[in-house]
Amino acid sequence: MTMKVAVAGASGYAGGEVLRLLLTHPEVEIGALTAASSAGTPLGQHQPHLAPLAGRVLGETTPETLAGHDVVFLALPHGHSGEVAARLGPDVLVVDLGADHRLADAGDWQRWYGGEHAGTWPYGLPELPGAREKLAGTKRIAVPGCFPTGGSLALAPALGAGLVRPEVSIVSVTGTSGAGKSLKPHLLGAEVMGSASAYGVGGAHRHTPEFAQNLGAVAGERVTVSFTPVLAPMPRGILTTASAPLASDVDLAAVRAVYEKAYGAEPFVQLLPEGSWPSTAATLGSNNVQLQVAIDADAGRLIVIAAIDNLTKGTAGGAIQSMNIALGLPETTGLSTVGVAP
Ligand SMILES: NC(=O)C1=CN([C@@H]2O[C@H](COP(=O)(O)OP(=O)(O)OC[C@H]3O[C@@H](n4cnc5c(N)ncnc54)[C@H](OP(=O)(O)O)[C@@H]3O)[C@@H](O)[C@H]2O)C=CC1
Ligand SMILES: CC(=O)N[C@@H](CCC(=O)OP(=O)(O)O)C(=O)O
Image 1: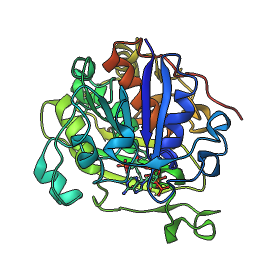
Image 2: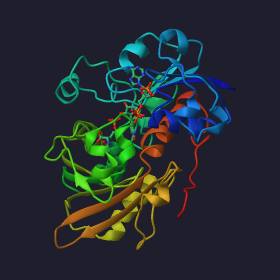
Image 3: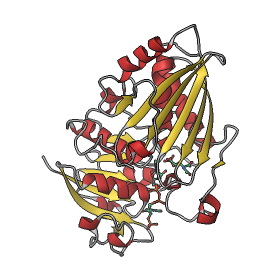
Image 4: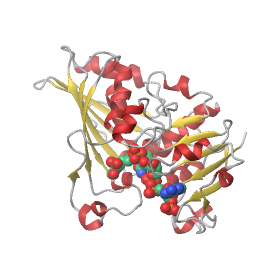
């Protein structure tokens, strides 16, 4: 079966990565490509790496241009997806890469994003317990934020097995593409090159409630999350260090057994051999999550390191993985476990 797919926000980083992956997806025909201020210009002007689509002209993001497709990806700024999705038919599979439909609690949405809550859709992180059942056959998918992808998968097995107390710390070093293409003073080359800097410090980043939602569901109780993002001078990738106090006297073998049980059959999650450490470079362009676990005995904490490509598993790859599940296709269709090195 060939699915006709539209991408709204095709001139942006997330839309561009969706298209890079869709170009090699065997069950997909690429239909309308839309944007806002870039409408009327050729895609090649914005995405020079997508040579086969270079001559395609971007349309306006309207219900009319997005009509007649089996699947529509919305790679739009926060707050814009709800209105567009409401005007697409219930039989269209809508995959929202923005934040609009991730949070279950309307109060959380109000507090962290503001404006009216657009609603809650099945959450596109298939490796979380129970997620695949909700994604199978769905017509609406909320793609996770890039930080909650790696950070949630880093801690979910430990919290689910009661290995750690529900008080977690997550520090994520991120590439600059996570911020999108629009001009922001703190992302100017002179600010970013040769320097790493924290932002959203002190529980101020809007992914905090998303972490708490994911990890609380796995733990079966409220999980407090202290999250700190760190901007690093690299275009893509996220390296997360997650930690929590150990709940009991477990050894590394027991921790590894829990993670092997959780992820041993997962196509895109690799618990690395002891002594190997995840790196963003090793995940670039792949849909992989690389994990390593360690015990800090003196501090009494479990440490988990996770690496992803923010644009692939953290956004577009995760979106296509979830699309595959929703459509009943093999989950790995069109996605790679092979990175790019060096
Ligand atoms: N970058 C990342 O790592 C991740 C991004 N996301 C999410 O994906 C979404 C897109 O992010 P990203 O690609 O990084 O952002 P970019 O700024 O790179 O791209 C935004 C895209 O949306 C279009 N756009 C802007 N305003 C409107 C509008 N009012 N109506 C229709 N289209 C509009 C832009 O078109 P134009 O060129 O014409 O302005 C552009 O195509 C965001 O919600 C983001 O949070 C999620 C996870 C990770
Ligand atoms: C470097 C950088 O600025 N990163 C973004 C992460 C964006 C993202 O992945 O998530 P959303 O879809 O929720 O925007 C940030 O911290 O806001």
